Length: 183
Ligand SMILES: [Zn+2]
Image (cartoon, rainbow, N blue to C red; front, top):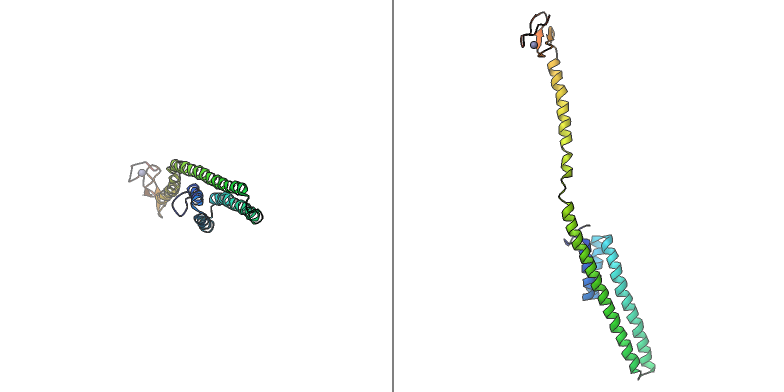
């Protein structure tokens, strides 16, 4: 589920295309063209195809029926029953297209709002914060051996007390730090 540049998600944008198709072919083609060039979303493109198929299909069917009607008008000027039926078919196609667009507006709007709430539940997962702790633990582990190395560094002529790890001059009987008996 991606957001479009208009701030609404892909399904709500698709619902907008079907709503525009009800308004008229120019707003519909405008939105479809915008989405195809700018948004490049598979969900919107699939919706665009459906809207185009319905709209263009209905236009072709209406054009074909109009052509038949004009031919009949040319040769049979008094076929009024035929003209009446043809104009009813024309209205029926308009109504069917309108119903289809409304159904698609509802379906996509429902999906759009459903996905929106889903995203809200997914967002507050604090998982990625666990990772930055690991490098800190590593640096702490690296620091520990360094500290040990420093205390174990023996100066010439000295030794290290086995109890308190302090440098003690060779030959001394007791450690100056803790009093441990060295010899
Ligand atoms: Zn000592």
